[in-house]
Structures are given as structure tokens and as C-alpha cells.
Length: 93
Image (cartoon, rainbow, N blue to C red; front, top):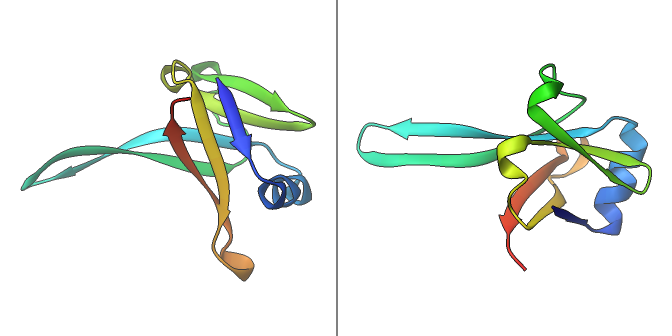
């Protein structure tokens, strides 16, 4: 899996000094089909055996194993001030 991140995202991750974990969450609604979204959080996952660790320079990104079959993932810094966070998006080359 190839992970893309821009310079701002990389600098923010380095400043936090923690890895980023990416997993899926399922959203079920009564009147619509279920949707799967990607969720990120800072820190190593508690169930690390369910994740693959991908190194980018000196940064670690933990990705749920079932997501690793995708060719590409983009991580992007979003938000402002103390509300900044990393968003993840899957894509193919």
C-alpha cells in the first residue's frame, strides 16, 4: 500500500510524536444503506495485531489489515488551531 501525505501533514504528525492509526467504522441508518467511513486517531492501536505498520520516513502509520489490499491511501491535515486532525481517503492509482 502506498500512503501519500503532503508536507503540512507530515510536519504536524512529526510535531505530535505519535503514530497515526487508520480503521473503518460502519454507520448504519434506519432508512439508508450502511456506510463505511475511515477514522483516524493519534497513537498506536490497542489491538496492533489487526494492523499493518507502514513507515514513511520516520513516521509510522498503522492501517487495519483488511484496508491494506487497497493500492493507495491519502492522509491530509484538516481543521484549524487545536481542532486539527488527520483525515484518510482511499484511492487507486
